[in-house]
Length: 305
Image 1 (cartoon, one colour):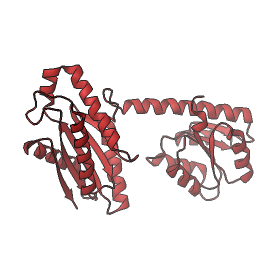
Image 2 (cartoon, helix red, strand yellow):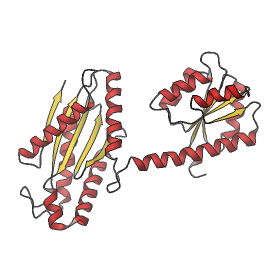
Image 3 (cartoon, one colour):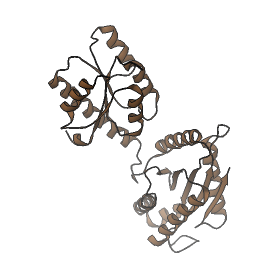
Image 4 (cartoon, helix red, strand yellow):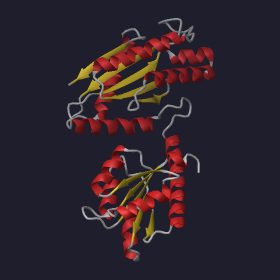
C-alpha cells in the first residue's frame, strides 16, 4: 500500500504481552506506538500523528469504550479510526463499540493474518478519506486552503488561544490592487496566473507549519498566524508585500505602480471568551479597507489586547 510505512498505528492495551504481540506483527509495515493506559493513549493521540488505533476494551483506569468516546469528542483525534481488540464477542458489546464510532472488532486471541488484513484495509480507507478531505479544503486555482478550511482553522486557533491564555492570534487580509482592471486589460488567463503567483508568494513567506494561507475569495487572500503579536504579523505582511512587488508582474492599468501590488489589513488580538474570531476577521477587513483608502500598496495594522 502506498505510504504504508509512514502510517502510524497506536496499540492500546494494559497487557504488556499483547502490546508486544501486536507490535511485532505490525512493526515491519507501520510505525507502531504503544500505550498501556487510556491516559497515555490520549497523550500520544493528541501529540503524535496517528492513523489508526487498536484499542483494548477492558482496562483498569478507563475502559476502551470510554476512551473511544473521549477520542471522538476531541477535535484532533475524532477522525482516527478505532478498531476494538477484545475477548468480548457478544453482539451487544460490538453494538456499543460501533455506536461510539469504532470501525471494526477483532477478537482475542488475535489471528495474525486477520489482524494484518483489517489494519491494512482500514488504513487504506483512512488514506483515501484524508485525500478527499484535503481536496475538499483546497482552492482549485491556487492550491491554497479554501474559504471553508480557513473558517475552520480560524475557529480552531481561536479556541486554542483561549485555552492557552494570554496568547496572540493574528490575521492578514490581502487584496490585489486594481485586479479587475488587470483582468480587463490582460485577460482572465493572465489574471489566473497572477493569482497563482501571489499564492506561491504567500506559501513561500509562511514557513511555520502552524500558519495557514488561504484564498478568501476572488482576488483576496487570508493568512492566519497563531501565537503572533502585531509586530510579528506586520513583519510578515511587509515581507509578502515586498516579495510581490519584486515579482514585477506588469500592470499597465494600475494607478499605484507599473506592476502588481497588494494592500494588506493586519489585525492581532488576544482571544477571550467575550469576543469571537469573526471580530478579528472584521477588524482585518476594516484595516484592509483603510490600506486601500490610504493609497494601496501598503499594510495597515492594529492590535487589540
